[in-house]
Length: 402
Length: 118
Image 1: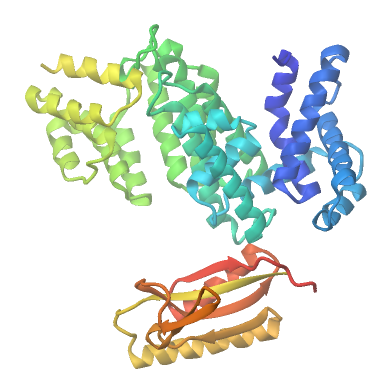
Image 2: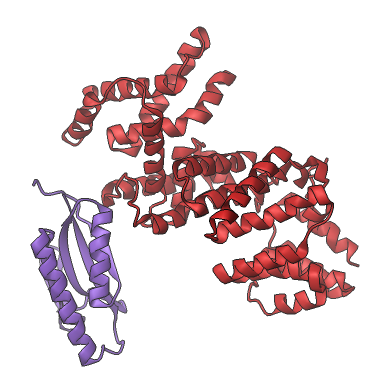
C-alpha cells in the first residue's frame, strides 16, 4: 500500500511526467515504463526519507535516468535515436510552460482522429490521468483484458502509423479540438451517469475530467468552447453532492436539496459563463454551460427560470441539431407549456434505443395521469438500465405511477 | 520519412461517373500528381484496371495454381494507389485529403513497415 503522499503525487504527477518522457523518448510505452519505474523507486525512497520538495521534477529526472539505464542494457538500432535525444536533454526541472506543452501534445496525440473514440478515451485516462487499466475497464464495462488490448492496439497504431506528437497549428485547432473536448466530456458523463455497477458516481472519472478541462482551459485560454466545457463540468460537478441521497439513491434535479450544492463551484462556473457571454461566440458546450448556470440560479431564487432554459435549448438545437438535444429541450418545454405539448415533440423523435427517451416519455405520461402507458414506458427504460441506483429510482417512479 | 500507401476504393457495380466527371477527376489527379512530384512526396502512383481482368496466383504444395481473379469476393475493390513519402501521419493525411477530393472517393492510408534510409 502506497503511503498517502506517494499516492497523491502519483495522481498529480503521473500524467505530466509521462507526457514529458514521451517527448524525450519518442515512444509511449517506454515513457510509461520509465515513469512506473520512477514511482516504484519513489515508494522505497520516500517512505524513509520523505517526499522531496519538487516531487514531479524528481519523478521526471529519475524516470529519465531509469530509461537511460534500460537503453544501456538493451540498446538496439531502433533505440539509438531516442537514446541520443535523452542524453542531450537538460537535467534541470522543466519549466512550467514546457510541462504544459508536453501534456497538450500528448492529449492531442491520444485524441487523434485516426484513433477510434473508445481508444481516445482509454488512452487519455491511462496516459494523462494515470488511471489503472482495470479502473478504466470497470468504468466502461468491458473486461480488463479487452481494455488492455485496446490500449496496446492504440499505442501500436500511434507508433506504426506515425501519429505525430505535436500541438496542432492554429488552422487545424478547431477540427482537432472536437475529439479532445468530446473525450473529456465523455469521461465526465461516464463518471456522472454510469450505466452499470453499484456506484452511481464514479468520482475518479468526474475528478479527472474536471482536472483535464482545467488543464485545457489554462493551455488554450482563447478557445471559447474549451472554457465552455470547463464551465459546464464545474456546474454539473457543483450538484454532485446532492445527486445521491443518504442510502445512495438517485435524487433528480427537481428534488435535490439545494443547500448541498457546492457554491464555490457554482460561483466559478457562473462567472465563467458570464465571461463567455461577453465574448459572443456561442458554441454547444457554452450553451450547455449557460443552461446549467440557469439551473444553478435556482439555489438562490428557489425556482428555475424555465423560459430562459427553453430559449437556451432553442439556441443549442440550432447549433447542434440532434434528437438528444431535442429531447432535453422537450423537458424544458414541459415546464413552460405542459406535459402534453412536450410529449407530442418527444413522440416525434426516433430514439428507441436511448434510455433517457423512455424515462422522459414515462415522466410526461405520468404527469398527464396516463398511468398504464407511463408504466410501459418505465419498463422499457428499466430494460435499458444496468445501474442499480438508477434502476431503484426508476422502479420507485414506476410504482408511483400506478 | 515514412512511406504510406494511399489506396482508392470503390464499390463494384456502382454506376460509373459521367464522362465529364471522369475528365474532371483525371485532371484533378494529374494536378495532384504533379504537386507530389514537385514537393518530393512522390514515390509511385497508378490507376488499376477493373478487377474482372485480374488473375490470382496461389502457392499449392510447391506448385502454383493460376485462377481467374479477383482475390477477394468483395464489393469494395481497389481502384488505384499512391505511394508517398511523408513526415508523419498528419502529413500523409493532408495528402490523402487532396487525393480523396481529386478522385472523388474514399482513400485509405496505410503506413509501410520499413522506413527507407534517406
